Image 1 (cartoon, one colour):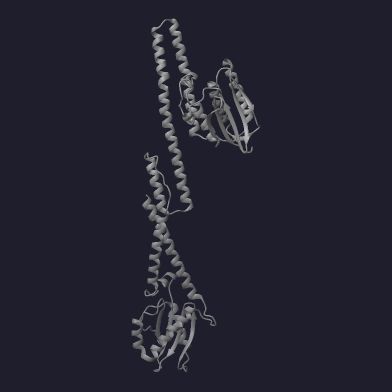
Image 2: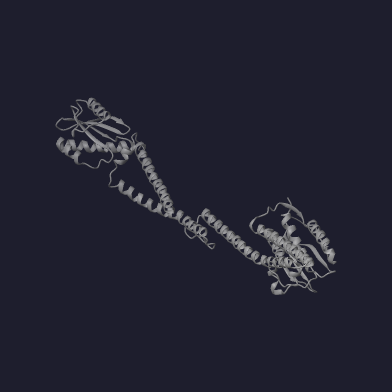
Length: 462
């Protein structure tokens, strides 16, 4: 297919250059036929025809009729013009068929030739025709007509090969070479993009166009860049899905296995054991439901782009999240407070940021010590909002601080299994913050506990 494109481009370019050559020849021919010589009233074509008539007159006067007839048969220097010679009785020397215009011009100059004129009399002129009558030394009378007849293309084809067609062939060869180069210039990068697309469609997710060295037009480079960006995005999504499926499959095994054990115990146990097993099955079902819901939320964040069009007051959003979290922590005497606040606004996705703040604050509430307080601060530094969330829990080992934002990553059983967490909350928060071009990181605070810092670039409201 790309070869057909190459030859189509070549054909269009080459035909266009040939048409241009014909047009230039047309313009040149028209100018030659119509442009008048400065200081005279005749055109360049008429001057050339006069030269032919003068040569014919010399042949007749000096060499005679037979020699002139032979000269007319063998002469090849007339170019697109024709020279006709008529005797006094109207016969053409070579017996050629002539047009009515040529015969009428010959008859007119013969009729206008005075009997007492020993020379010649030029009596007829047209746009592409000149006629002259002459009398030789033997007092024989002749009419000579030089004419450039036929259509434009006929006159163009009548040019002398010695100078015209050689130039045309050279020009056509040069235009063909240039057309080949331009066709290759256009089709080569497209062929490269097509090959990369084919490889990508066949499953090679690393297929990229890369840097284009030949055919680097702005449009082609933009197309290649967009393809590479699309391919990188699709690769990220596919790998994310694969990883998510693998992790979810792995995480589902444990609660399903515990459900099967509880089911077997319920079948064989007494009423008290049956009730305990049913409670266990219910907890594991709730855990599975929560894990699947969070997995779907994480997949949605990775594969779709929420419209960032909501006017969000960060302090009001945090107050709403903290109010709900504080209510949940009351059973274990755990509190959540907004210690510092600034009235900050940005444009983003209200639902995504609410989910991010909720997951971070709930994570801190789950691991803070009983009777302690999770402290939240909302500060501004330049054009960036800082949200700091600190708990009073056991903290995280330094090598694992960056990994707690990975899906399904857990540190130790004291910090995860006991809380019933799925290892997805912080991953969801990280994806939502990244969607807003922000950042999230964790560190072990002085005096114990984990401190999570969220940074969000502020935008003016609509």
